[in-house]
Image (cartoon, rainbow, N blue to C red; front, side, top):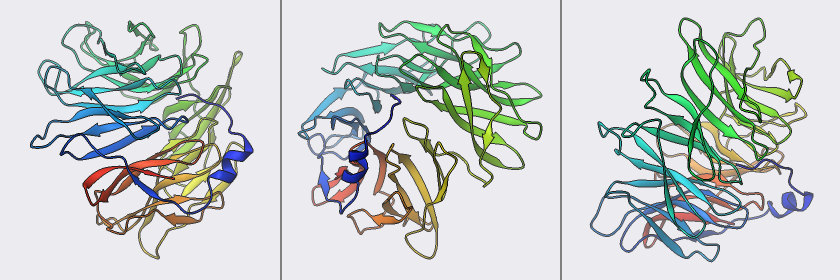
Length: 365
């Protein structure tokens, strides 16, 4: 992810009705989209005719699909794409024993790089990538047998990130273009605590307020705003401000608010809520009288995408405008096979929908 502010014109283009565009799939298969960048490049996955094997795929801005391939016959999934068009993802069941994941990265022209764990045959998983193609996540294979937070350089080298004394099973979850990294680690007998690694790779444990017991950091902006969660008689969205001289104590959202996503500038979304940088909370209205409002992603214009409806598999894919009003996305099947996952700064949205040709990746714009 690359953090920055969106120009006002983006918010204007984000309004209005939507048209669902069928992005297609590999021949005879089904597909879904996971992410898109501001240039209209979409990534996701697809099957092929007569096969349950999954291939990572990329769609160009003209909706041409490219098969990014499998790894040693194993299923692959593209999880995200940066502004350059570099994608990252995983191969499934590739570690030893074959029950976990291996990390992958594809260049804008589709060249695959396998991102190593801390030792051969160990698992790893990527969580985020910046515009310099630096990926962060976790990897196994250290002598202690634990999972550790790691950074993969643009050249593909794995770097274990330092952890505070006593920390185990850490993960790096977000990275800025300036090289700030955030995540969390477990502390036996204490619980999970949010961490930040500065541009020099030094680890900082993010402070807690007196009445908070646990914390986790999920993303960081270019100006050092860290967004995550704390536990205070329930989980609440929280944010810390990092400066070179230290980190402020967290500002916590009062409402029970398990964090679901954040924008490049630090706008956060939780079930039924959007929380902007100024501290203003907007309620995300439900589409119907029953059910919930569950966001999946938000852009810097405050446009939120997700689903609204009952928890019985019939929720409707929607987008919420800046006032928190929900708008149904075209597709009236109300099926678990229909969902929206991501929104870019121009307001284009991707996910999956039913089309005459089958269940395919969808682009709404």
